[in-house]
Length: 228
Image 1 (cartoon, one colour):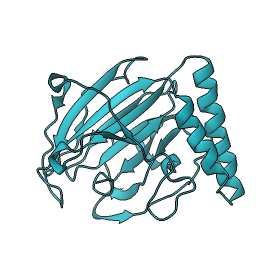
Image 2: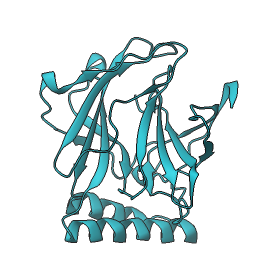
Image 3: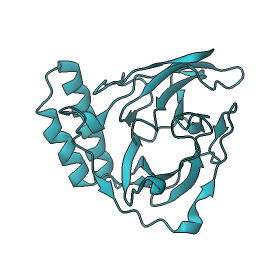
């Protein structure tokens, strides 16, 4: 796993197995160089791209901008080094209605030294978000993608009805003129723990413990640069 080359693949509407920890992202990088904790086996969970269900070209049905009103002093700075992986400083995702905010910059690559911000919020999914995914399902053709997307919608509706939250990760780059946040990653909370690793290139690794094997971690890597 220490090969310096990376295979980049954008998996649009690739619905992961229901046995895996449920997480959903827009665009993914599947590298062969990742951070893997000692005594752990790391595997890549197939990411699900809810943001590109029914996409035409690079447009996406959930591509919306959000005003989160996070105060300036809420952002904790995370320093990414050129040859070091950095775990974001939290042990559990925030409780319902709460958020964590971080600022970091890639230490190398095309966007080196350009600060970007990540906000992790646990919030009840709203009707507008759910309805937009439902409309996108009508444009799908593959039966497995349709089944997986419908499962996601059912999960979100169930959480909303129970007033339970999803872990939503938002991203903004003020240095490039962005004034509103984009949805970056969605995680349906599971009993298994999860955490986020910042890579030297600014990409983020979302780690989830395999619910079937406590010694295995499932990893989804999001390419920050593509979303810029």
